Image (cartoon, rainbow, N blue to C red; front, top):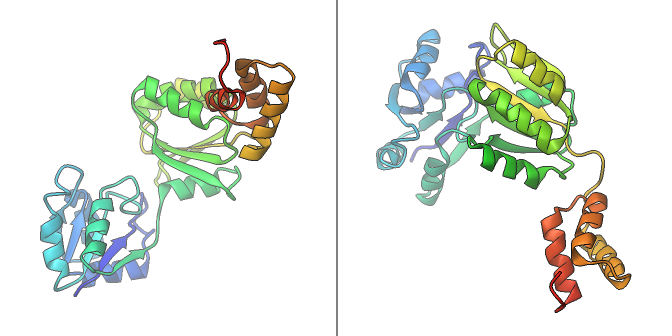
Length: 278
């Protein structure tokens, strides 16, 4: 029985790979790669001859049986285009299937663009929320930002160059002009990390159109601490007892608690009970 190894590969600089990762790639019976052309460059650089199998978003389900068949006899390494596999890249389904079939799954840690950007951002790293790529559609993107605007955690997103300006505009409108770090082309020749307010980042990239892989790191909501449900309920009860409407309660408590107004309105109407419609 083999082991499925999740091997992190360089996000730019080919020297950013561990000896253990190289040893695993050499000894594996098969390397399942998101882009075999990209992975072949890495393997050729380090003179690795292991067989490659294309494993990407459009064939990942069809390839499961083939990979599991190899795992029954030998080790398989899973790699993405760059960075840590199964993190915003194909791999979750394979990991799940391997575990369900009883095969060991082991990570070979290494490069990760979100973590590299986070630790270099200058923003708090003790509690963060990674949400992958921002939604492509403006309406969905804005809805997501409304839902997370009150959270105190540092926010980490991936973004593409052609959507960056629209994303920054929506970030500024939805979150306010918070501190941000826009990390571009990390570990590569033209690495750039723009730190400042969202507005300053927007001005910079409006003047200098961005290229390459981009990670956004945004400060959490520091204006308030998110309250517990008990604290919120007690304040709503007090305001309702004072004659405050459910709608006004929701608005007032949202400003103090960090909770979404819509959720607070539902709580207020539930606590108030049947009443004349406002």
